Image 1 (cartoon, rainbow, N blue to C red):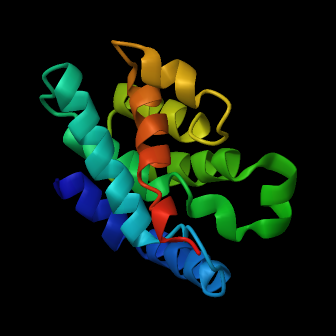
Image 2: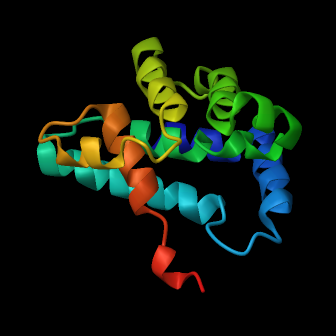
Image 3: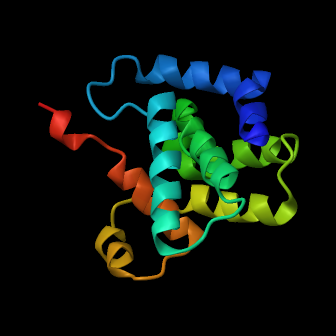
Length: 150
């Protein structure tokens, strides 16, 4: 998972992570922090393994997970464009620098752009065979520990 480590260690990503951490500091529930990102990557990879073999897919899920909420800190723009679009724009900026091929980047960006909203939860969950983006969407929803909220 060397390429995922490149994302995490990239100075620009680290700055975005700190910006997001500051924004989420006072949030009472469902923080969009590194722990959430890693949970999304883990759950997505497990869901993918349950439906098919996954050679080479682990770094793609974790890479997309590290980026999927990173645009939230741009609050003014996020309200206008949506955090998924901003996160996709930031991911596009760094994914090639971190060694991901064009086809891999396309798959990851599609998942990042399509991960928000709750309107497709039941429809996607019911499907037997899910796309990369659909698995990623479900993982994002399943990663939230809603039972912990008061």
